[in-house]
Picture 1 (cartoon, one colour):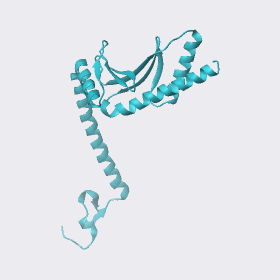
Picture 2 (picture 1 turned 120 degrees about the vertical axis):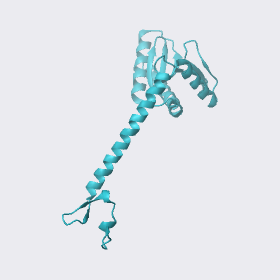
Picture 3 (picture 1 turned 60 degrees about the vertical axis):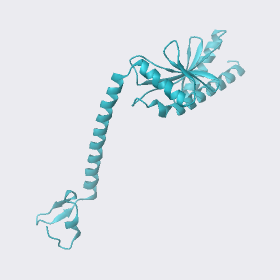
Length: 197
């Protein structure tokens, strides 16, 4: 192709089209944006498929013992004394309280940290106060769930992991959410007791 002194000949042939007289005519801005969007979508689809296949592999090959070992190693690296408890969960102390990461057989992508606190329930009105405070705390804090489990208050953060080591990115924000949830719960309990409800 010969240079005729116009910019149209220097354009990428992918971004131009031929007019009826054979000269290159630049594509409109919308056409370029549309082509770019298609390329981004295709690349995103490829990445999604690759990640999905990889995720399926790690879930299929994961064992409960392997998951426990990864959690213990991670917590010890963070400076916590961690161990597998009698239920097969991984327990550790944080700010003077016992937490555990629940390890569920057959669900290696399920990640749940639990702060379980024994609670003395003297009457049905005590139980109702606990339920109201737990419901309030769950509804007003991000991520944390608070509920009554027999004679314990459980504050949990639960999620499905996209990668085998996804918990490492979620650990610190999850612990903050657990503490925030417990604090809101305790404040609501104090308020309910003070009001006689």
